[in-house]
Length: 257
Image: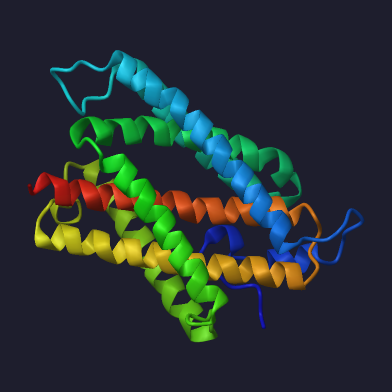
C-alpha cells in the first residue's frame, strides 16, 4: 500500500518513505506515537488552562463573549506561533521532538482563549464540544481498527478533494472579508450554515481515518523513531481542527435556542 497520500497536509508528502531510509535510533511504533500524542494533548490542556483562567479573570460580566483586551494578544500569539511551528515541523520532521511540543503550547494558548469566549456566550458548550470531539475520535478509531472504514485509494481521493475544497472556501471567505464581503451562509445559524458546519465536521472526522492509516503504515515501514513525534503532531492537527469545527457547529445550534 502506498503510504504517501493523505488529505492532512502534514502527511501529504512521502514523508514516511523518505524517513525510513535513514535511522540509527530505533524505529517508529504505533504505541510510541500514541504515547507522544497523549503527551501533546496534556500540553495543549495545560496551556489552554492558562488562557482560560486569564479570560474569566478579566471578563466583564456585562459583556459576555467579548474578548478581554489582555487575552487578545495571547490568542493571536498562540494562533500565529502555532502556524509557524506547524510549518517548521512539516518541512523539518527531524525536529519534531522539539517543535511538536512547542506547537502544542501555542495551540493550547489559542484554544484556551477561543474556548473561553464560546463558553462565556454559551455556558456548557465547551464541555460538549470536548466530549463530542473525543467521542468522534474513539468511533473513528474503532471503525478503522475493525476495518469498517478502510483508507482505500478512492477514499483518500475523495477526502483529499473535500478537504481541499473546504480549505479553498475558507481562504476565499477570508480574502473576501478583507474587502467587506461576508459569507453569511457559512457563519450564520440558518439551515445552510448548520449544514455547512456538519459537512466540515464529517470531513474532519474522516481525516482521522487517513491519519490512523498513515501512522500505521509508517510503523510498518519502520520509519525512524523521531517520526513518532511527527505522527503525533499530524494527528493533533486534525484533532484541533475537529474540535474547532465542533465549537462552531454547537455555537450555531445554541444560538437558535
